[in-house]
Image (cartoon, rainbow, N blue to C red):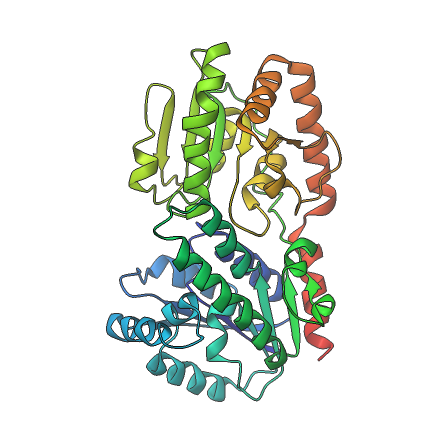
Length: 388
């Protein structure tokens, strides 16, 4: 089957959740399909030869479509006076749409797979069978960000939330099939046929994320794109609210914040107790160098790949209910707390109780091995394409 895959950004390097998902899906699907990738590029993004070479190693063809800064600004301006979500306007312009449409006509694929609603305008009216991967629900993410935002920006997030919610509903009819990561995210889609949306979970590369035995340099690690609002909020919550409680019982505690693009707010968290690593060539080192992993997420949607990776590396994990619920881990394989006091208490308990820490890490590791394999989740996607 000729499979045309449209992504809102070049899916390499694997420094963001959407990139990770589509990269592994394409790599697995390439064993049975010819993959024709079209990756959009925002202005000022890097067109690296490394990304092209990596993607060409399993894709039949790789195409990058660079967006013009002037057209992006014009699209965002128009969105102020229309129902188009700003997230969609940011990634959509007429010149790029014409290029993508011409590319589709030339390739003449058997099926189109579009990742994320923000890329949907490029293919929603193309006369081919199509699948839309909502992945997670942008409208819910905007709603949660509005709850945490300063009073002067709440209105903007609420406005975008309303736009996204209607757009997610309107898109439904334009695609033959639909996918999403979790049942919880599916429940947030405001459409009478939302139960027909297929659950395609993420996976973890178990050959890559394997347990490592080495002395820990840090007590606690949090990993993620540190320029992404939910991760910024989590890092601040960890260092400004949870850390002071921990220091009352363990004054020499060490925390590692690891991940690409640390914002100025994250960089300001550096101290004798907190290390901000920035980009790491091998993120496994961050997990391996720490005693336990925490995901104190308070905003955002979807499934946290960072938790799967940490569990795959046999790290005892702690998270909020927001991050744990989509994973649906069995009891005592992932410890859950919501308040700063609850999370701090769990950290101290795991740091001081070796037996409990080993038990949690072993149960989490086995759960991920049994449940989250890319080959298993992508097989569902493969069958879905053939059902059209």
